[in-house]
Image (tube, rainbow, N blue to C red; front, side):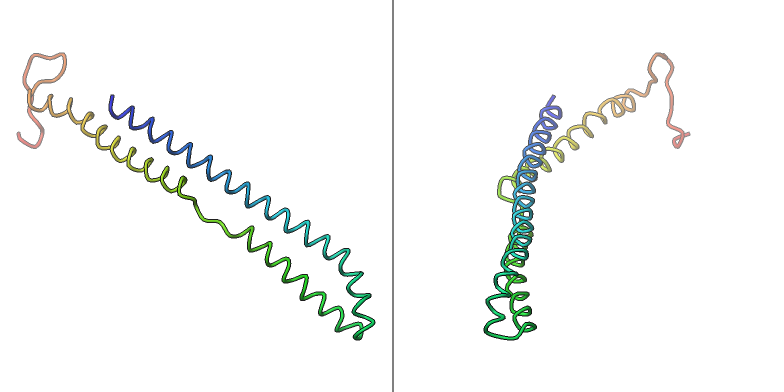
Length: 139
């Protein structure tokens, strides 16, 4: 019975870990979409107005390179926000609880599975038969 409870605890911990991981991945995806939309809008609108404004101050090629650098910095900032992701405290704790519960359940199941084998060996009888038997390596 204890092993079943431990397996339930492991399942609950795994579900909690998966829920928090999915929420974290959802936030990452949202930041990534925002970064992409912002980069596209910046490239479309600011390029034209910035290039026109810079063209009055410098030549056409340097104006284009300046705008390219600005766009790269803005896209890199939002890209880093999307890429920055580490498991939170809840996710790490749920993983630890799941591992402990599974380890305890394995130990309990191994002990439970060994009881009938040990009992049969100690009794020295096969099920359903009245005669004694010996292990092959003791003959």
